[in-house]
Image (cartoon, rainbow, N blue to C red; front, side):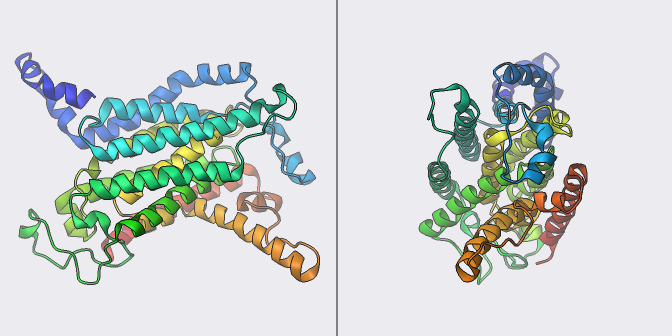
Length: 399
C-alpha cells in the first residue's frame, strides 16, 4: 500500500524535497527489514490489551496429556490464555498490506490468502475447544482431525494452482533437488538474459506440482502445530526459519544472484521478503510474551497459519527441501508422533500390548521426561534450528 502510494505521489514528494523517502520505499531490502521492525512493534503495542481480553474471556489452555507425570510437569500452564496467534497473524497481515506491493504482486496475494484461511481454521478450532465447557452439554470440542485436514488440503490445492500459473519462467516449476544445478554454467555477462535449464532438471507437470504443493502445505502446517507444545519452542523455530526465508526469497527473486548460485530464478518472489520479514518481526514480538513462563500461547490460530505460510513461500521459490532442513525440528516432531502411533499399533498386534518408541510424543516431551527442564529443551532446540539453517544456506553454493 505505502509503496504504491509513494509511487503515485512520486513527483509531488520530490517537489517537496522528500526524494529520500521515494528512494527508500522503492528499495525492497529497506522495506523487508522495516517489516521486521513494524511486525515486532505491532505485537508489542497491542499484545498486552489482546492478552488481557483473552484472559477476561477465559480463553485459557487446559493441557491434558493422559499421563500423570507429564500433567504434573505442565500443571503450571493451566489457565494461560491461548489464541495468541491472533497477534502474529494480525501483525503479519497489517505489515504486509502496508509495506508489500499488494497491488501488483500475485505471490503476495497467494500467501495472504493462505495466512487468512489457516488463521480462521485454527481460530475456529481453538474457540470450539476452549469454550466447550461453557456451551451446551455435548457441544463439539474442536474440529475433527479430518475436518481440519480437509481445510488444509483445500488451501494447499488452491495455493499450488495459483503459484503454478503465476510463474513466468520454467524455473518456477522445477523440482529443486539438493546439489543439482538449475542452469548450466554460464558467464556472468549473460546473467541479464533468461538462462536455459540444465539437462536432467525435473520440470513438474501441473498435477505433480499440485500434489507436492498440497501435501507440503498441509504437512508443514501440522508439523508447526505439533511443535507448539512448550513456551517459546514453536516461536523460536519460526523466527529462525523466517529469517532464512527472507534470504532465500532475495536469492530466488534477484536474477544475477539466482543465476550465480545456480538456483531457480522466480521473478517477483523477492517481494515475499517482506512477508517473511513480517513473520520474523511478529514472532520476535510474540516471544516477548511467550517466553517462559508464558503469558499467552500461540494456539492453532498461529501455528497452523505460520506453518502454512512458510510452506507456501518455499513452494513459490522452489526451496521445499531447504525448508525441510531449516525447519527440520518441526518435521522431526511430526515424524516422532507418526512413529510412536505406528509402532504402538504394530506392537499391539504383534505382542498383544502396545509399546512405545519414545517416553512421550511429540519428541520434546520425551526429552522433558528424560530430565531436561523445559528451558533446556527449548534453548537446545533453538540452537539446533540455527545450526540447521546455517547448513541449509551453505548448501546453496554446493552445486
